[in-house]
Length: 254
Image (cartoon, rainbow, N blue to C red; front, side, top):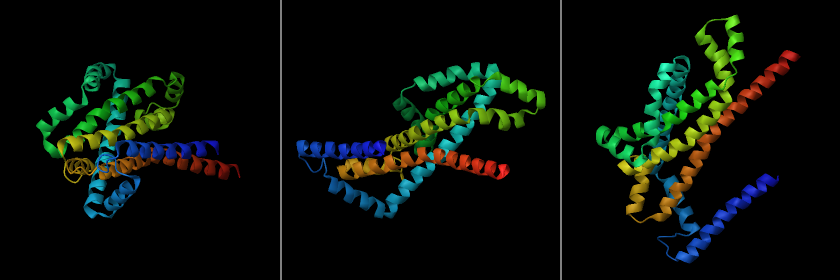
């Protein structure tokens, strides 16, 4: 109960800080009131074109996140099983992580154009995180579990689903949540910088040039909700799986 009250207090603190900023700035365009932000939020949710832009951006995030996470796990398994693959990928991953995001955006937008750039930029920035997270999880597996499985079976594919994935599931969930939170930020930033049409980044760009900062803040609120939603989904799936397993165990015991 104390945790809930602290969370509520934190939210009210944010409102209080904004009210203070509004009073100090004293400019309705630069620091719109909470009422103006709520009205802008209502206009966005009531606009068909704005809703489509939000939906398209969300779908882009989901597509890139799934592809990136699966490819990161697959490459991590290859690197775990074949040391030369890890040696080959290490400098590539290190270079991608070291590159400034703006440089990646500028270079890739010039090469791939406005349509594909947000996908590729987001993938490039997320892949090192998913790959290194999965590889680190595999390296931390107690080798005794693998030896025990090999006494029973030598089927590699079966071992992946019966040994490796169950043992690294918790770490993969943490990595997925990290990728999910970052994916929305990177995708929206990419859309904004390349001025993608039918996107949240595009909405932010046009709101900014029109000095509609109430809409900018309203879009930010929507992005926070989307980030929390994407990060909450894997935890929800995990809880459902645990509940199903617990119910099955109770049925077996009866």
